[in-house]
Length: 206
Image (cartoon, rainbow, N blue to C red; front, side, top):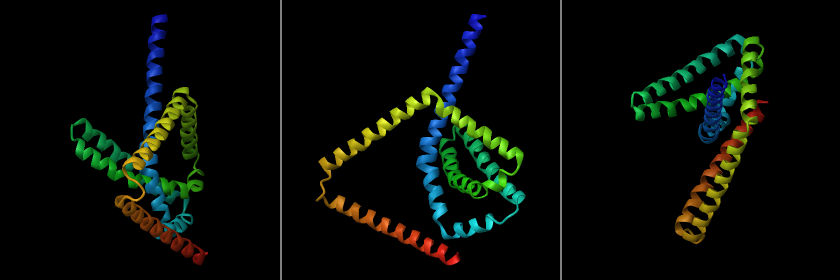
């Protein structure tokens, strides 16, 4: 009996570790590095802001139908990408998975906009609460807390190392650095203009 309990505990621990590591992988790489920036870009577009106003006015059932359809497409693309990986078609699988990320960001945005409408359905509310409770459980685990601390340390170390490299090999007077700064300032200025235009458009419509 003790042997069976030991085996069960090892399987349970392995399962928990796998779930936590997958969650960290998606949170840090897929969401923070890819999906979140796409979501922010989508949210800043004028056409999307107009669409947001229309989505807030649609029927709850229509909102649920749109979200469910997009969610099935996103998850279907993810499963197909996994099948391609298993078959050894890594390149095609990678392209498909990367292609679904903008759609996933758009789907998440639709949920955020129509959240109150969709949570009016008891089943959706139940699933949502279960997902949130799972996330809370994962984030309360010691493995998650310790791993995030290490990742934070690694990020800080990389940032310091890059700064040291830049100071040593790319002095402020370097032509490369000046070019990069000009490009950065141009992009930053363009983004500020876009945000200002969006803000003006929103104010006018209000």
